[in-house]
Image 1 (tube, one colour):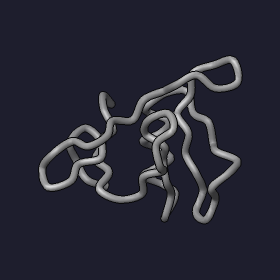
Image 2 (cartoon, helix red, strand yellow; image 1 turned 90 degrees about the vertical axis):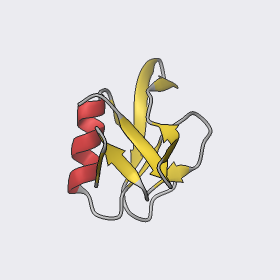
Image 3 (tube, one colour; image 1 turned 120 degrees about the vertical axis):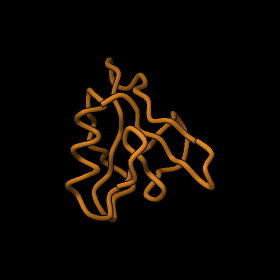
Image 4 (spheres, helix red, strand yellow; image 1 turned 135 degrees about the horizontal axis):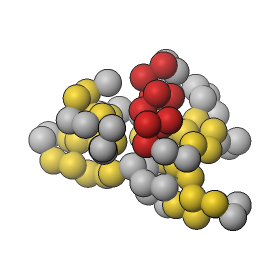
Length: 79
């Protein structure tokens, strides 16, 4: 697992990355309907597993950016 991206009209518009939070570096994913209380994950593999298994989930791809739920691709494959 190398990359998680938001791709719209063939163009990568965002790339998932870990960023500093609470003394560590994490990616933030959200359960359906949640806007607070993120699930903080350490690796892109963990993020990919979360995105593949939780319906209607979201991920914050960049610090301060809106949560993404559509047009998500894992290693170039849509989910």
